[in-house]
Length: 236
Length: 236
Image (cartoon, rainbow over all chains, first blue to last red; front, side, top):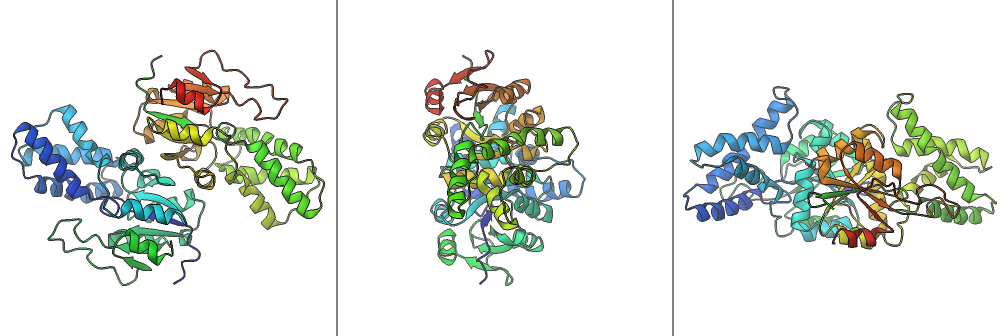
């Protein structure tokens, strides 16, 4: 399969390593219950996430100056709280925005990363900013060998500059790096930059009705049902 | 003492976390013995390190374009091998240059970092490049919460931009970060940028005749004999 030259695995994080949707819904339910509020937290989580792609596109197209994900998440939050009838003070908004720093991993993520890191350099390569990724890993109880982020390239995935910058910082050629993601669009960007690609299926990232990214694009180098199967297939 | 606001510790690495001098001398002695060569490896290690400050200064003053430490180490290596009468082929030079990725920690470093990370975000903040720092930590068997490097600022310490960039990437104010280093010059730069400072004494970094950095500058926020004492003083 030609993975002998791969020295590092870079991981998409939102949806691939962590289950953002369940994490946000659960925090919302607790927060709402404490305040006696009835809120559609499922809709809220989905709306927050839905604002993310268009916001990054505005940055990549130069319509917005560079704004990190903490900044974009906050912009979107301010837009949607009105829609969902939620009142949040300034300090509560700041605290809520940090929910993305506290997202919980899928059940197989930590054990899978631990196995994979014995053989490979393991690094995040997320559109999340460095602080968010650092806090998330620490909170969830694991560590990357290196926290890499689109923030270090000043562009968002799937811009090829992000993958190229990651390889440069690791002192590697892009062909020596394998991108791991649950999203075909991300893997397509990595492939354009010359990386190897591994698709991991996260069939409920968007809930039980998910229709996208249920199957691996046919051109990926490797496909797995979770990180443990990925470790098996990579001989870890 | 006013450390309540400190959320992250950033560590100088060469000399502070790892004993570059002994590591290089030991590799040199093994390499020379295998080839039946008589080389002054102590002088070689010191000469390699001595070239480092002037080379970074040339970058910071714009005389050289941005060159990472792997690149600067290689330039210096090519200069000194002649002086020390060492013949090295291209591939051997590349392999030797990676000795900086394999430097060994001081005896207290790993245990100290492990204690400190329970309470603080721990990150490197070295002039070493990201790949070097990542490989070094992996080789030595520990992980930073986040690998930060002068490479991410495009300037070398003690330029204040390096400390400011580190705080920004951690999502913190410089006053929320404490720089840990065995070198007054590094801590002075951190202080100018607004960071808190901790001096750790490494009295044999430059060998038994060391004359510099034997005592903490009087203005540091904290001084310790090693990382374990630092952990004690920070209540970890």
